[in-house]
Image: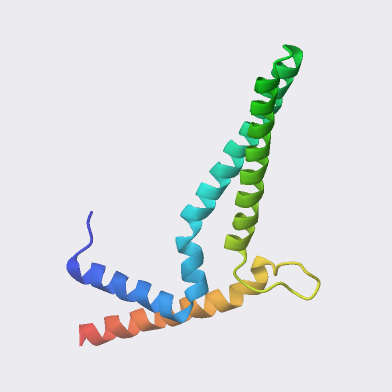
Length: 134
């Protein structure tokens, strides 16, 4: 069932409030497609690396230098794209600075902040509902 115009307007207001209240969380939600794309790139590049190893071996066995060079280039390109997507994937997931030990904070460390945000949103919703009913 589609949303009414008022519900769509309220949803847009809530999205806008989320973006202004916690821009890192909002960008993390928007970045989920980027993470999926980077994951696919890493998988395809790993497969390209393995295929490059096969082509390189095929060229060595048949003593075809050109085929061996093509296989090596495939391996090189696969390794480059894998490393690039792996590094960018780590940057997309890093929403908060690293702790002194060098490790990222656990999800439980972030839950109080998110809970307080949800409490504020619920309170706003209750106020709007109460004001609209009077």
